[in-house]
Length: 246
Ligand code: FPP
Image (cartoon, rainbow, N blue to C red; front, side):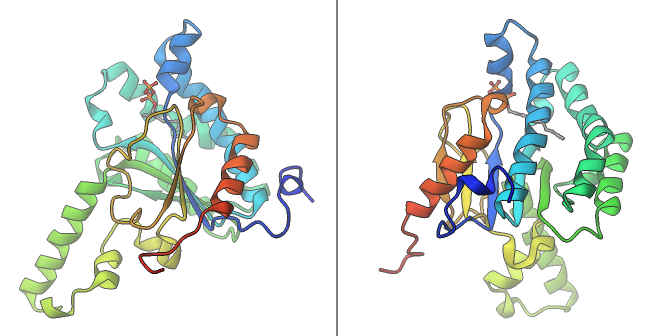
């Protein structure tokens, strides 16, 4: 049994899909008198720790909000650094991903990424496609509203061409046109965690979060620990999910 598995009793229900808004890298760096990018670097290192622990705890999908469609408005130095992070991450972490049987997915408008970033991310998806364990799903150049508009546009195109009947559009067909369609029945997170004390969802998985339990942690992302994750899973287990029923 792994270290983290030992921290959960066997009767605890582990969320199948955990989504995390990894917030607070900038403030973490400021607190230490370092540049914001140092916070992102430390945040990237913490992705390794938390992803490994989540996999050991039996999580099926871990979705991480790594870059939003709104993050392009940050200073170019910071955007460039964030675009290079996947090169560093997969360059150093791929052996562990293979060892841990973790499969990488990306959810986002990848066509609009710089060439080098897109290539390294899609290569990681390709190199891990045979892995059967946890899915590590990076939301990269992702925005919930843009995703919904994109789905509506594609459905309209299909309806106009006659390949679908508009009256057949239902929740399932709509979900199938979202960027998370590759996650199939696991597309909707069971638990959303946001770090850094902010309590909002910032355009993340707007459709998919409809019935998701939410936990807001005070730690900045680089300080978020495996123990915090375990405590959040225990809190999730105490929640009563009714999906609009009684
Ligand atoms: C939000 O904190 C964080 C981000 C916009 C980037 C998150 C990215 C990582 C943690 C690294 C991702 C790793 C890979 C492999 C791509 P913030 O900068 O808004 O923090 P602040 O609110 O304190 O300023």
